[in-house]
Every structure is written in structure tokens, then in C-alpha cells.
Length: 344
Image 1 (cartoon, rainbow, N blue to C red):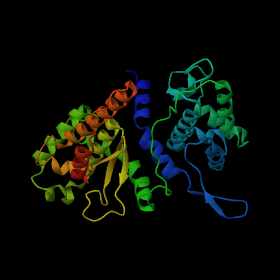
Image 2: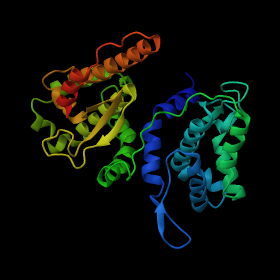
Image 3: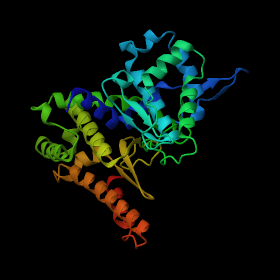
């Protein structure tokens, strides 16, 4: 795998966390109207949000040189994630990358009337540079309009944007949004710092084998929960829990949440956790609880991931059976409720 391919893989794998952090932390919650009143700032990956996003970008950047400044790389990367996912939801297509298109950054290959991925590539960095250079406030929308014209009356695929459940102050609590806006940006740096302190940093990957290995490490390192909570263990445990949560989230396609406004005896209370929406069920796994469970069963963390994978497979099998006209397998409500309760 080349360096460009590694960077692209990381870009896609990190989409949920990075795009969520951009929406929560980098975009405003409200915008001032002409009459001086405040209105909600729309940031829901819809075509209607593009003018607001573009005007905000113009208020932040005066020249194209500022866009490509290393100081603004994180914001611009979040912005192209937002634009790309918005375009995918509107016209279909897929993320792609190569050495030349899009300044070496990921870009969009939209669908068009000739077929899937046949549209003119949309180099997102170039779109941002053009918007800041021309300063008309209509570039982001014009790019989408052109892609929609190329699509014509052709039936596009159902939204090919990633399934990302955006948290806002409208669909969550203010405490949860504020916590996640701070916490999400610490996940990747926290994991990187944690793995760097391991005996063989390069051997750690966000996969099941590493979860098994971590469970064994925790079982050897600690005898009790109190030992895990000692002041000199804070950094290690914080990194380990980020590693657990992010590994399970990526493999199981979940979402970081935070247990605000929950009863004190709820294990999710005041804890970051991963929510998996599987059919009509929610399964919540709390990294802190999985880490504690590893003291009794070193494979408890990996078993948590196995539960998610099994439920995903049964969901897919049920959908396949339904489409074939056969009966779906018995639902897992009872088992899922039991598993979820053990983590809640």
C-alpha cells in the first residue's frame, strides 16, 4: 500500500469522527439575520445548507493562500468532508483519490446520466479555492447544480453518503454536544500517544486481535477497578478506552455518544460510549465497562465487538431473506436487550 493509499484509507475510516467534530466544533450554532436576530445555522449535509457554509468560509478566509496554509489544514479537511458528503447525498457517487485529481486530496466521482461514477470528478479543494477567490457566495451550490444537471432524469443510487448520525443541540442535549465537541478531537491523538508508549507501537491496530491483546494486558496490569482509577494510571486508561471505543466503532459502524442526563446508576452516565443502531434496536457499549470486565474475562472487550458483528450479520441475513420472500430469522430483541443491559 502506498503512502497516498494509506492516507486515503485513514481519511475514509475517520469520516464519522472527523466530520462529526467539524460540525460540532468548527461550524457555528447560529447566524445573525439582517434584523439583528439569531437564527439556527443549518449544518445537516443538505443542499440548503451550502450557502450558509460558503458564507461562513468566506468570513474565515480572505485569500486562497489562507486556505492552503498548514495552520488551516484541519478546518479545510473538515470542510471538504462536509462538501463531499453533501454532494454524495444529492447526486450519488463515491469518494476516490489519485495522484493528480483534487490536489492529491480525496475527491468525489458523482453518478451521471451515463451511469454510476461516470460524472465529472469534483475536486473539493479546488471548489473551496474557487469560492474564496471569486467570493460570490454561490460556488458550492453551483457545483451541485452542475452535477444534478449531468445526472438529469437518471435514477441515482440511494444516497451514497456515509450513514452518519449527526448530533446537534436540536436532537441531543447541550451537555452531550459540548462534551463530544471537546472529546472527539482527542480520540486520534490520544490513541497515537497511547500506542507510542507500548512496547511495540507498530504492532497495535484497530482490529479484534488488538482488543484481545489489550484485554489480556489489562487483566495482568490490574487486579481491581480501584487500581485502574489510580492517579498514575489515568493516562494509560484514558488511551486504552479511546482505543477500545474507536476500534469497536469503526468495525461495527457505530457512533460516539455521551451519557448526559442519565440516572446515576446507569453505566453510561457521564461516560462516553458507542451506540450501534441495528434494525430497530440500539446497542450501547461503554468502553470503561468493557475495560473493567476484562479484569474477570480477558476476552470481554473482543466479545463486545463480536456481539455487534453477530447482530449486524443477522440484520443483513434478515434483509436478504425478506427480499427473497422467505421468513427472516427470529429477532434478537431478548438477547440484544440482555447484552445491551450488561453495558448500560
